[in-house]
Image 1 (cartoon, rainbow, N blue to C red):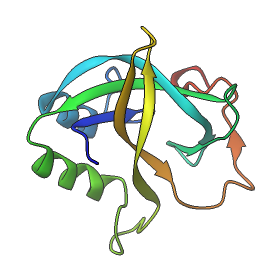
Image 2 (image 1 turned 90 degrees about the vertical axis):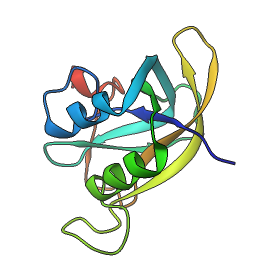
Image 3 (image 1 turned 180 degrees about the vertical axis):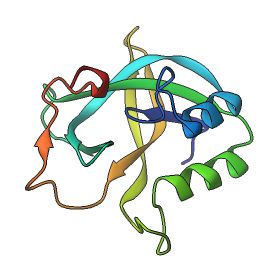
Image 4 (image 1 turned 120 degrees about the vertical axis):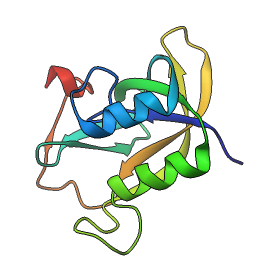
Length: 132
């Protein structure tokens, strides 16, 4: 199964001032605000999310419909450290999940989940990176 949707929760958020958030904005359509079942952590100047079995744990963010998925995901995968090369090799994994829009409508979407231990990381209890 695949999807042309992407859930973002950190430096790719719609109103976040970064080169890559602007890249995403140019190569996608904003769908809406939503959340998924997970926990959010402060990695460095950026966050990382992991999936959770607890329905009370939510990560909040934005959902985009990706235009030209092959090209756009290649650039985003490089940015997120997918693969064996680069400064942050294998730091994240692109995972297909079910998120919920704020309208409660479910959406099958990709999300970049943190791929390392969270043992010594500070959890962002609100699940919202902009409210940390």
